[in-house]
Length: 303
Image (cartoon, rainbow, N blue to C red; front, top):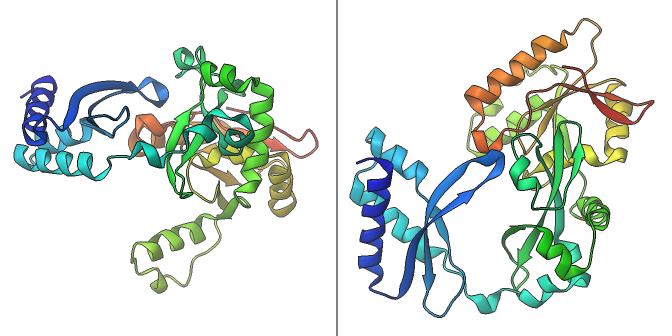
């Protein structure tokens, strides 16, 4: 089966299993960097929202022989039922009111050229070869985070706000979430291995390579930390002026100590190769290399 036939077959199976208790349909969503994903959406009768499970990864598993067709249907059905949302648990009033919605606003950075079409419909500002865009964290009445919503021009009209206000609030909220996460690459790897049960204890001879990772506490869209001028100044105080910033993904950047012998073009080639082989298309940020100037208090593209 090709992807279209596979999706239609899964759709038919899910509809049969739900026996009319859900409206089940396919939906195509444009994600970051213009990536289009096809999902199956299931909305319970009487509701106007429901989970959407994207089919693309499931189809690759099916094609590669990792999952039988029936297994993919079982898993998709399980996820659709598990993630059903009770509309009464969502604080819609809070989202409509800027006085409360403003506290949920966050910023993220995306590639400006790759998201040109999307940027025409949403508030944003350009930053180097990137664009600052905004999203809101949606909470339930119990305070738990249910999901996120990309802020568009209609939200701006509803709130009576402009992009400048969004930016100021997003930067303030960045610190409301806590301090940034800035650590050596070695320590970051140790923590990851420890969290996943890896035997990092055996590696007692880690040497500091002069490479660091900058992200936020949630490890989600953490590149926005480079917008905080105070954070960037403190990093310069810690590791020296003129440090190098390499985009790793939309979630974090890698920071290197300045080295007069460094060849920026070779670093740019390395970033592009990592993007092509290690980072999903949806999470790619940029193929450029940046340098921070403490005197100018800004980043600039050097390759």
